[in-house]
Length: 107
Image: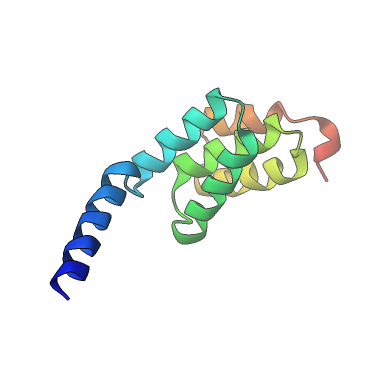
């Protein structure tokens, strides 16, 4: 039993050291690295998972909107920009991002 406890403790410590904390800054940093490495679908998945549990994280949602647009998922990106603008209608970055989407993405 002591061996099992020790192994569990060591495994937990190794995992904690290996994987960055699931925090807003950790998710943003990880997904930014994925974007830089053209792993857009991985970044999208990570951001979606984060937003499922943290729907008010505007920074993550803004990055998701851009990731979706870069993949050509313009209708989905538009939904994210509309959500962002409903919370902060005067935000220039959100307005610019939405304006840069192709017209075909708009209803």
